[in-house]
Length: 344
Image (cartoon, rainbow, N blue to C red; front, side, top):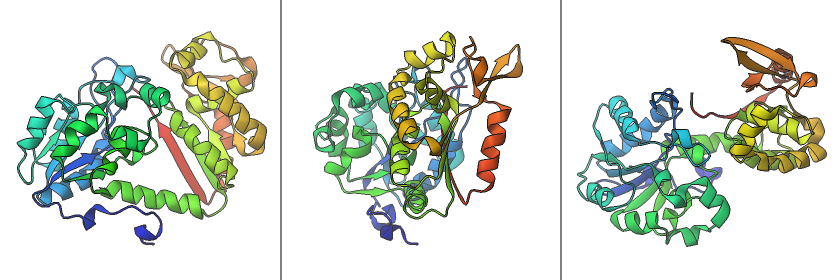
């Protein structure tokens, strides 16, 4: 099925980028080791390579913007110098790095680009207007975001904008939605591939269609949940990670002070009310953990929900839940998995 029959997004292959200055938004936000602050999973970096390689081969002057960490993920909010090194390694070509997002150093680095060269600019989340708390509190629309610091400083230097950050596509941030207001734009290779696959799932999935939603950054899971439940797309939603724990809290089940403080300190308890609503309206479609796993002295241990609360930092679902989920998934014809992690 052709992309343009599914989504109304121009493909980057339709753009003439030779000799043009191209602003490319990617998502290379990666899990970081808490102690060393080094990247421990390069999957998103590797997935960005085809688009970057294609644009460099087509002699674009490529300015790359991306984020790492957030206010809700502060331990991972670090410089992206290592990301540039990883990109250079997988591309086999140098990607310069400047630790400035849109200020004088970043602007000069863009102006200095020659056809076929690329520079990764500093962490977008260094800017207040790019963090989750700003998005949630200020609530600008795309047109208003065209006047933000990021867009005002970078857009005049660019000939076009390409978005390849599918994993951040739910974000209403200047780097994601505002450059389209002032520049010609298109979707990158990864974004178009993922949107095509997602469109097939959301429009006409083969039934039964099962969604597995988990991980730590649960805004992604809750952003999807309402749509797939109300539309009837999801036959079942299997919740794991903090998404599953929020479902338990929504039923009045206390996890224990240690884990509940962890959730509340990160502002994730705001999703409890949404969880109550979904459980009230779609209880038969939502599965939540029957037991939880935690680490004790280097060993995995498990605890039934009936034995909560407990002062443990639960990290996984237990064997009873795993067996239940395996049984449901074994009869699925379509499986959609959304899993976002933080640092390791």
